[in-house]
Length: 487
Image (cartoon, rainbow, N blue to C red; front, side, top):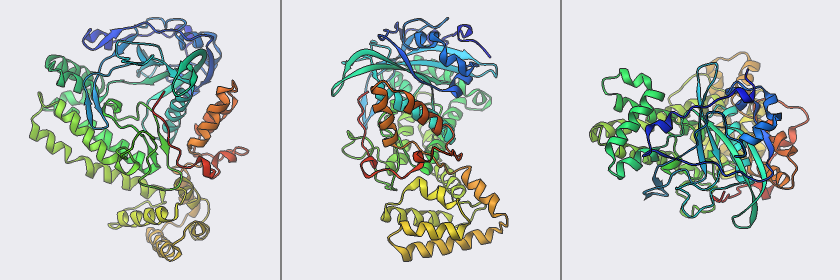
């Protein structure tokens, strides 16, 4: 393990040249203090949990002191926002500091969010506020704990620096980790600005660094696009299976690695509502929960368009046809596991869809249903869950069918089946009202609640005696909260 002072950075992305990023120094925040840190994220950099108590961590993560070897850069990219192309976006409030290599040979880029103005800030102040920083921290680490690919968050630092959003708030910084911060929008920028040689340079760099297996393929560029498509399909399957709503699936928020990226007004479903919109700015419901899959397909089409200088259009169209079958297969397998099924039958998709329709009609809590389904032997659990449904005849028919389906599997070890279910069905989920309560405490200077919530959500599948309140049904005021994009 390393001490914090021994961690040095390199910035290979900076060496691509000035066309790809701009050197910018972080603008420090005043009177910084640590709000919360992730031991799991520290471990990715070979740092011990005690590094969170090192005053130097706050200095590094508040812009007060540069990381050894850091070369802060604001990356340039563009993207489609709510379906409309924006020709130049870029890191308007974050800086790519560099990357660290851990003992396992993994490379992790460090990105400081809320670091002040850059050439891409447009009319913004380049700052992040405490509430959005806490929300991204909690989501990043919780999604990872759930097994959903995500960027990671090392820590949040608060400050006395005032910033204005709807009201006056306080600035904060978040240190984000990811193997790469390249997005779909990077490729779109160089395509639409007709910088095709720079586009090729970016493509070659990303393939060499993150998709090296593609170099052995007859057409490495097509192989690269196929890998991105496959990873995106797998990511969306997990979002949909676990009820996660991203909220702003613009192409500049889509990671080339197929990880959850750029958290804004996200939410996990409370009551099952496929039309749920978590972003109060999304008036048309473009990024509703049930629209996430077609939007991911649309975003992949936008990426494909940006790659047409190097990949035949018909070849790209053939690749895009694979997305929905890949998504459906991965999603159905996840739903089988959530229901305790170990084998596949031809009508499983229809069986799952019938359950979801019943849940929607009765506003059943999505996460609790699956957890409680594994709390007891199946007949007992189904009898208890029956109380949550309005259409009793419909649920009884589904429950009878489900019991028959389980019987056909021939599982004789009921305890083993329930243990498998508990390993994939979280007891604890990041609900917006829990995040809001932790944020309000942090804004008063009390960081205990956000630290405890983070600790609970880092073990979402485990029974945690004394902390059951975090698994309770949300109060009515806490359901279906819509969150602002402002950060």
